[in-house]
Image (tube, rainbow, N blue to C red; front, side, top):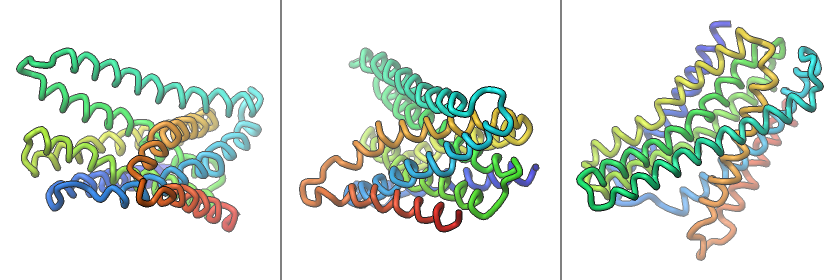
Length: 267
């Protein structure tokens, strides 16, 4: 069982590493390539939407039917809604904190508040993403450790990792504009992703050692991922597309198709 926790740790360390790569672009470029970022965000959102069903919700329903006294449809629905609500509350907390920071305009700590709110928003956003990866790998110990399940977990980590690249840039470049050095902007930007390995390990441990929560954990992760994809990634990847209006959209379609192909082919 411990090997699954180690796998979750490795996977979330890789998603953090992609965040660091995104932050590293501040060292080499004045601004990121918006077209490339849109494509990556679109592809990641497509992967996450497809993975939310085939790799999270479907296994959650099947597992709930086996181990839970509660009807499977209630387990999946409640877990899914709780995951979405958790992300919504996190977003509200960040929004409130940002408004409080804006109220300090003209005060000596104005710049510090802006930096803190920026890093906090990305960090909160990364917690359920780390949990989703950890839960996916922890679920491999539920008796369904096969190629399909493993590839599903890998695909979730891939989707989250891809969207972490522009997130890393989204932290480091504003910090650079605030007057921070390139090195410090990079260090703070990559640090915003360090919460993912912590959340990933916790998610894997919970699922491995408390098997009854597995259906809830899987559907929770699905709800969180859907909200992130629909509320944040898709609107963001559709911005500034006058020259290539369907570029990011095809990224969404491609990401969904790749994830669907892997699941159906391996299933």
